[in-house]
Image 1 (cartoon, one colour):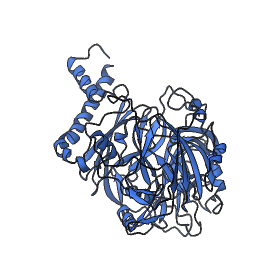
Image 2 (cartoon, helix red, strand yellow):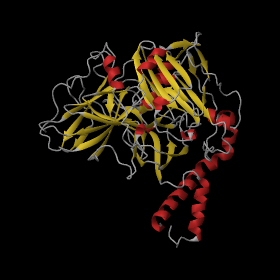
Image 3 (cartoon, helix red, strand yellow):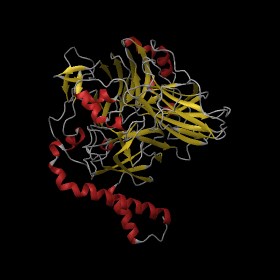
Image 4 (tube, one colour):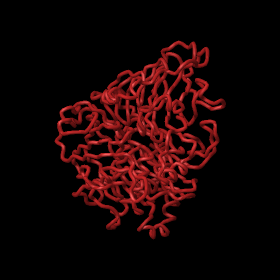
Length: 587
């Protein structure tokens, strides 16, 4: 730092270091996100959607590895809200996870400032509102973490970066959808698929006139990094670009073994990065398609999203039939084999200058196994519910992590069963009592008739196996113990199982859930509590943030701390902005 730095500036630096001792050595990035309702017509019919900063979908958050991210979220909805950060591993900081197990919700007309570090991460992720089916109305956007310049990427620098958000969509908003679930009805077939918040291009007479569609502009001969996220409600989608190969390069923070696909299934909550070279002639535009999977295509024809890939020298509009999806409605083996073909690039460096395969997960002894089974929807106490191992989770009024910090008893139970039990399904606050530094095997068994997306906050896991039918211990002999992809969201096919391995090195209380919004809303989730028994003085977990929100049994603390929550966050942001500017001038 320059010798001329005055006493006032040094005082400012000390103040900032006092506020945030764990974040001071890496750059800060600041964002303001305002959630509000707007009227949009993505499928040609006006409806209420959730916008972020007035846009649907929301803006891209773009940062670099190890940045400290400060996001001030203002809630202009008429109900509580939380934002969660899909796939981002908040090291030692489940306080910022943005789910009800760790955070009190942000009330209407209030704000909350998230602060977390994207420690040793790269890749493609997204953010969205985590409460009460709100993602079904929008509120989502892409979250991109770029490499530091000193870490090489395992491909030539692309000529551009393209974000594509795909997802099934209903003309009913999230409040209407959850009311139907509360009344014991299933959601039924979606009304369409959106691509970047827009409806389908009129590729045939089944698409109504007047629908605005997405156009992706490209130049011939260039290669683009295309990041695709499935932000939908519950439908797995097949993604493809007419006449173009999709060279898979990364998924949810890990570089993959590079291989070409003509199409790839992207399940709810998953993110993929492709390298796409514009190597076709420009006689016309090309279709970009996202269509429903594992359904009767004739009945579900309307559940197809179509955008346009437009070369700068294109000579005409896209026309003719869409490129065909996989023809395997009654045979999941193709999809299963495709999923297991996604492997980790073990020679590429990720966020650090060491190969991704340097962690030899296949040589580590498993310390505990959890077999988690899902079933079709059931009725419990007269209500439609979804379960893991016969338990339909109910969030207590006081977040679990906050209850622990204040030594409250009876908020939850550490008795989630490690395997399905022969008993009637029930409502409960049951969570997993996990062991710090354990290496666990989770086997997900799907006895439902639809694919489920399984997600674990705070972690990535190795997807070591998939198979049809029931899992047995003999299936361990088929596990990939060398280059299995590491990710945070994986599909479990109907009538099938998926096995993952997880190294429990991130302390906190972490949500384990279905990304299918209807199943999640109806109770298909639990939490994993991971405590370092030798921790004294918050060495392995960050302390409760100064601006924490209070609710439930601790609601009495909220009144006295209202000013520090809202005004304090503004002061903090101002100090950090001033420090960043000061350092850039004087260093």
